[in-house]
Image 1 (cartoon, rainbow, N blue to C red):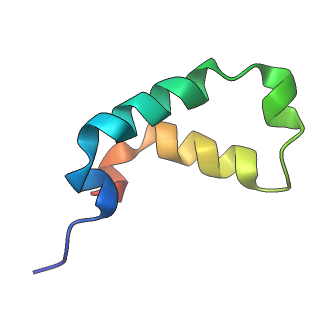
Image 2: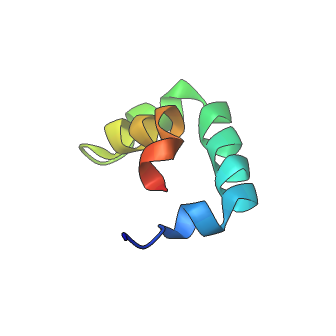
Length: 51
């Protein structure tokens, strides 16, 4: 049986983090290092994959 991820165990902080990421201004997201914006988008869009 696979071990749960940290985000599965910390659902409330994960939900709050997704809310913060979603509220980031586009200018901030555009200025992130290469690939970071895509990582954030995946985290927000597919939280079930982190369980």
